[in-house]
Image 1 (spheres, each protein chain N blue to C red):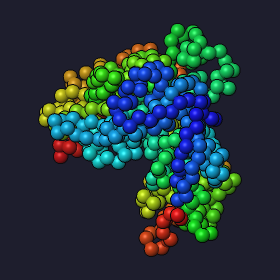
Image 2 (image 1 turned 90 degrees about the horizontal axis):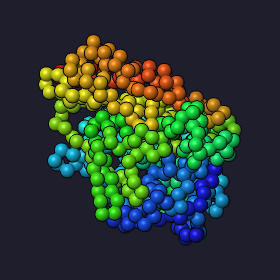
Image 3 (image 1 turned 45 degrees about the horizontal axis):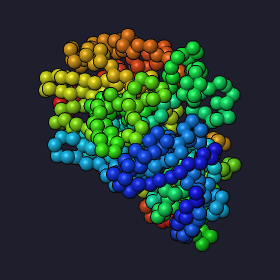
Image 4 (image 1 turned 180 degrees about the horizontal axis):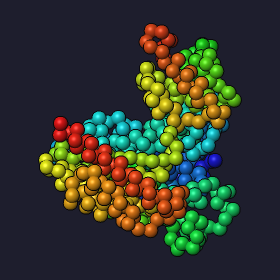
Length: 164
Length: 333
C-alpha cells in the first residue's frame, strides 16, 4: 500500500505517494524526475547513487524513501546556484576529473560532504571519504587532484556553501 | 536490482517495537542501517513480509556510561558516530579500529553497531543475485540440500564477516537481547553459533537492543587488525582482536579472537594461555603464533583456502601480540 510522503529535496518540498519497497533513489529518479543521481551496483559498493542527507554522504540505493521524511536531502541538482557551478564541480571540469561521467555526480556529492565537514582534508582523509565510490574509467588520480584543488587553503578558494 | 514487496512499520518506542516483533515473529526483519538487510532482500535471499525500522526509537540510538564501570552502546548507534566518539576510541581501541574498518564511509554513515553484530553470513553462492543462484541447484541456505562452497558438506559453511564481533568478544562485551516481557544479557562469545544459516542465538521475536562494555580500570590494552583483498571497501579475509589486562608486573590475562575465517568468530584459548602463562615476550609471541595452527580445527576453502586461513591466523596473532606488547611498553614509560 502506498503511503503519502513529504520529501525535502534541494530545499523544495514534494508530496509523493510511495510504496514501502521504493528506495530514495527510485523516488528521486522515477517520481521526481531528478535523474542526476545515478543507479549503479545497487548493493552499496559503487557510490554513484550518493546524495547528502543531513550533511552526510549516504547511498540512496540502500535507503528506503519512507525513512527520509523530514530530512534535508541534497542531490547533484541542488549544489549549483543561479547557473554557477559548485566549486567541486568546477574543479572536476578544470582538472579533467571526468571521463564517461557516470560516477561524477556520486563522487562530487561525496567530495562536497567531505569538504563541508572538513574544508582542508589530508590526502588520507580524501581517500577515506572516496573509498566508497568507484570510477570504472579508472580516473581516480585526476579525481583526487580535483578534490584537493577544490579544498584550497582558506581564502584562496571559493566557499563550499551549499547552493540552496 | 529492485527490492521485493514488503509491509513497512516504524514503531516509536521500544515497548511498541517488541510488541510488533512478537506479533509478526519470524515474518518480520528488523531494519537499522539497511546496508546488509536491504542488499540481501534485493538478492532475494531474505524475503521478510514485514520490515520494521528501529531508527525512530531514541533509547536504541545513544551511547552512555553508567558510572559503575560499564559503557552501553545502543544497537542503532551509527558506525560513523561511534568511530568519531573519542571516549570509545580511548577506552576501547579494538572496537574503535574495528568500526573504522567496516566497509566505506558511506556505509558507516548508514550502518549500525547492532546491524554489524548481526551481519548475515557470506558465501560465494549465497550472496549473489537470484538469476545467478538459479543457475545451480539450491543450497542448504537457500532451501536445498547441497553446499556449493564445500562439496558434499551436510551443513552451511557461510562465513561470519562481522568486523566488530571479534572486537566485542575480545573486550568481553555483553549483548542485550530483548523480546516482549523478557531481557537477556549474553556474553558476546556466546552470541554466535557455528552455523552458516542460523548464525546467532536470536530467536523469533527477539532483537539486539544494546551492547554493554566493561570499562576496566585503565590497566588494559586492546587492538584490532583486519586483512582484506581491497583496502578501500571490502569484507575481511581475516581479522583479529586482542585484549590484554595488565597487573603491573606483566600480562594477567589476554583474549585473542579471530574473525572472518569461519561461521563464527574463533576464540583462541590455547594461544591466549601461552601468553598468560609465560608473559608477553618475543619468544612467547612466537609460541602463541605456532599454537594457532593446531587450535583452529577444521577450516574450509570458502573465499580462501584452508591453508591460507591457517597461515593468516598465525600472522595475525603475531602482529596483534606485537602491537599489544608495544602498547604496554609505551604505557609504562
